[in-house]
Length: 355
Image (cartoon, rainbow, N blue to C red):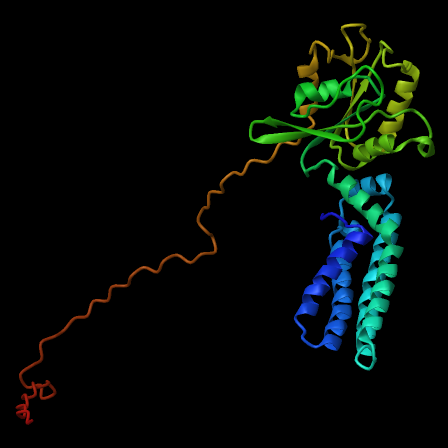
């Protein structure tokens, strides 16, 4: 996605482009007419390029479409793109109208100045939309590349050890700290297992509260859980060093289970501090049990079917090759009195060639 310029940047580039067109005309009146027409066309082309630089949101995957809606609001983005489309249409139309008027005008310079002021006014009307669209462009470019492959999403309350786990098992290197909401957005890591790859998604912490009260960080986590997960690792902290009691952690677990139909593996972290009966345990601090948890998660990964070569047998419908039939013909020597015997014809003498 290209950078979205401001109104002043669009006008500056358009005026310079029109000035080059104007120099190609020797007649002063024709030069002013060409300048007005060129400014309108240049602004129009730049606006169209901005619109074309944005994706069709209806064609995006559910995850990216929901992320764009969470961060900026798809309706608001469409409204700003519509404003840019309005400016593109009217700047070209006004430029052509004033250019035609200048052919019958006594002073084309006045019309040129009037056209410049009018075009600049329309472009400045959408300056806020241009600034907003550039923010959207920068935000969408920072979204991680979530590929279409087996994906494990790590979920749970803030500071339970999600980032520490993904750092140990994948290529991702998220920030790890002892305060909540360290992860501000979606982090993607990968792990190669033979010829196959597993994708891990580290989500921001989610709090057990109504959906309407959740912030953008929590909504991003929920989007990843519902849209890209093939399996979910839900980490709990029985030591409650994360700052949240087990009761609310387990309540959030039940909410997550109700959202999805994929397998959910519940693991109690920080076994170096306390153990939890009835749960698979691990410690992301010293690595104890992490490999066992990873192995259990990989059991949810479907095994690709092996291609077995098909041995083709004889086709029962195919026709058997026809056997050669040997026909024995007996020739009897003709009798002497047989007048029907064929006689050899005498050869004709060839005529000499003449030049």
